[in-house]
Image (cartoon, rainbow, N blue to C red; front, side):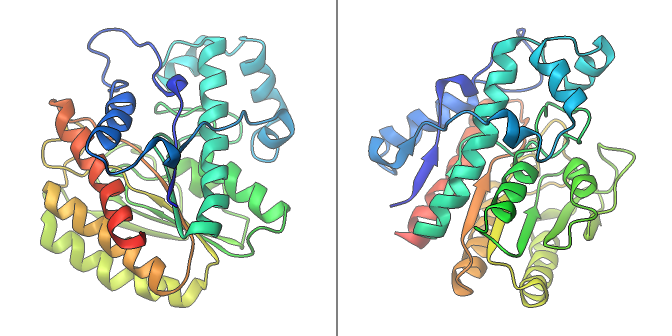
Amino acid sequence: MIKVAYSDIFKYDVPERHRFPMQKYPMMAERLLAEGTFTPANFFAPQLLSEDEILTTHTQTYWQHLKHQTLPAKDARAIGFEMTPRLVERERVIAHGTYECALFAKQFGVALNIAGGTHHAFADHGEGFCVFNDVAVASNLLLARGQATQILTVDLDVHQGNGTAHLMANEPRVFTFSMHGAKNYPFRKQASDLDINLPNETGDDAYLAILMDTLPRLIAKVKPDMLFYQSAVDVLATDKLGKLALTRDGCAKRDAFVFTQAKAHGIPVAVVMGGGYSENIDDVVEAHCNTFRMAKTLYE
């Protein structure tokens, strides 16, 4: 059974017209249930990331600032959300949900977090709507607990996974692959194990051709026994922040290819959502939901 991480805490209160579309989380869960893609049995409420689990990836100083709400104002501004105890709790739930998805993926082939993909968080600070780096935390936990030996992260957000690249730079058991807009945030990129910088207006055909050429070669080289897939939809032509000009169908074909490759090689895949900033929130929700529909089609 495909398992989906969801909690009401995913939706955090933000000011009206805030660029981050928080409403997408409950909308996705409601749509997937209403249309019958999933039933309540598919959903699970993630646990809370413990302090020890946080410290596998993030510094003690950063954690203490978050825990005691003493983060400097400029650091909170870099994250982009009002700093509250509820935000910290939210991020702990999201990150643990990604780890739990990895465990469910080992059992069922695939599992998906309705949130997650907080790839801009570094060891000692957060930025770009990211507090804890969920994929890095989950990777470190899997490796430390003997639940994976070689991990491949496939980050297809329009923005480079700079935090993940930096955190995993000295961990040979995690291969970081980021395919993103060259002229987009973060403007100071980190070095992933493989970065593909795409020009504006890349479009479906060129994007899919590059992915289809790259991913099979990476799987053959890395030989992962776990794959984290950041399936962001800020690659859409409708996105306010992305400029890659993909269609919704192109996004769905991208998802299908990643899933098909993982399944063909028997690699469990844990999926995190990442960004999506189209003016019409339904464009975001529908494209995200397509990722879940594709998983169901290919794995059930």
